[in-house]
Length: 225
Length: 78
Image (spheres, each protein chain N blue to C red):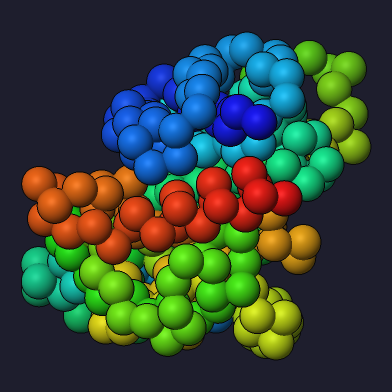
């Protein structure tokens, strides 16, 4: 069985190629590049990735316009069928705006754009995106964002914590996120949104390889399934 | 007809932008300002046939993110 992935490109996406290369290198298989105006996705996908960037110039709210683009209706329908969907950075913002993930990503509490490596704690290694990590493993992944301040009301936060849906937590103060949440899963566990960029830490030449295990988890879970 | 949609952050939601504006106001030497919250004003030119329900739907589906924002719609007489 060939692993089939798609990377969606919105106008203003800028991590789409990095994401495609990471999937090609770590997962293998076919990676389709899909444009935001496409109304349909390729058939038989195992995995969809929404990359980082500044889709539609962050107009209105980060991710707001992209979440209403034609291709996102297909992504939402495909996610609801159980296909794995990963949103990184702007991709995470798009997933919350599209209603696939709870909460919202607001301006960083310190107002400044944050661009550096951060320490993360793996909170849940029982998901299809994190099974190749150890629970409570401390990993280092780069962030680069202005709007990464995760917000949800207390009842929502309690619920996602109680259901084990916090995949990654910042191990240091980064952007003011509620309960230091860096990555969150949907109820079924097939959609993950995270602000840090695992696709930027795939090879030693990039300064670290802690992002590899995420893509290894995806391919191992989906191909052996 | 002109319609104004005011989008503001919900109470309790931290507004770092408002805080920075507040800080800048104080930096200019103005006193007596106890808090600043920044929002967004969206003006629409619409046909008279556009209903309140349709405007409400626009606000809910796109103009405001109700996880963090409230909105208020105002029709402006021409």
